[in-house]
Image 1 (cartoon, helix red, strand yellow):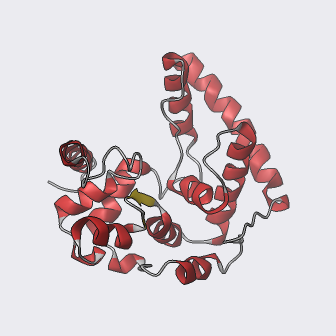
Image 2 (spheres, rainbow, N blue to C red; image 1 turned 30 degrees about the horizontal axis):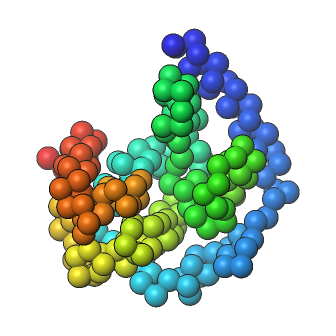
Length: 218
């Protein structure tokens, strides 16, 4: 297994070097967004519930990083280790179980691509993630992500989701509410606290245990 892990790491490293080499040739755009230095302003103009990062509770930020991308502040847009581990899991299961996508990749996918899975789309997603990391700070990327990611019940962004599920602004969320919210993006329809409260609470408990494991709460 260790030998397979090393081989996958090497293979993906070569792919990522190619992605980095040719990233400057690809400039994505669609009817809503174009990838340039005004991207954050573009999102702000389209999201009425947009909130800046310093208005988002630290517990929600920490819970999101713990669940979605533990190495967010140390990678360059993609996490080779996470992708290699996800690949091994997918191979052993015989189906796609894990994706290994970083927060930056998820931001790229939600802004510029559909949910249709293909190798071409994944490579383009990696290119966009790399460009996002060069154009914006980590905090900017995290802020944009938290304002566009889908939480379910028609709510895009943490503030809109906070109003949808808890009837309050995101900055007023408790630790428990932050944990519940952070557990939604991976499967919004399954963990929806309105339609599946018991399932949402189990997910909330998992989020809090992961936060505790990573030293975010005692």
